Image (cartoon, helix red, strand yellow):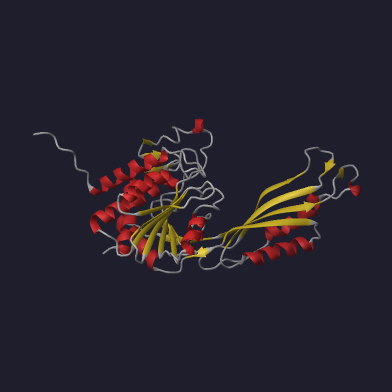
Length: 390
């Protein structure tokens, strides 16, 4: 008798399916804002399942909105195909855009952030539809190639389009790499806001030997900087840590050692909680600068407002899925950077983030444990069963 094909156990089949699609995505060098064909690959898989595919590209950014079903509730999986630059390729153990499996790890740029999550989304949906049939409600995907960059024409653009036509999302799982020590240990149920400022303190350039004829902006700013750095902006709340203020860049001078600089430029950032409004933080900074008598200009950029998911349905479903599939209890957290969840929260009352371990994201030799790929898809599938299953 001819030899038959080996039959994989379901958990092994899930891992193999996610691994295959993740590798195909990693091979596409989709450095922000390039998509490099990732969305076409995903759209082809979704179209075969009956999804309605819409491209909402804008200003060189690739965006995909795909939906199966017309009724509520709408469960959306969201994420990004773009990745950060590789850094020096010679310091990678392998080509960052040629996925490599070694010692139980999948290596490649985007392996953890977040092409494995995208692959797990697709496999989870395929498995769900194979076993459950049509959803009770709708399944959607919102994907962009501009999350790692300025993010002005990505998910926020799609959200604007959906809002304009009255389309809403009931539940959204963003596939960001939230896990820390082990897959499933951390869920993000909100994020802090981000408020940046560029401060220019105006002095008067002059010869360093004649300081009475100059005005040194470094000297003038130093007391204000000390006060800003020691200020307690708020004490946070039950869901968020206290607001922080950090200087990211500080520059002044011509490079010459005998010239008093005429200007100082400081770039800083607030990561703020729902305990503080951005307008109040701006006002307090101006009060401190004015109190020190500085001649300055200050430009502000509010790139993210904080959001918090207070509803319990999605969080309970995801926590239950993690417990059932991974056997651990996840903790909810709002720490860390921003994500596209901040945009989606404008049209969706329940947004959470969950994905792989984040220990190597944006690093050389970014990687994910192969053994986490199948379980990640099964957690997503479990959420589908809980929220839109028959």
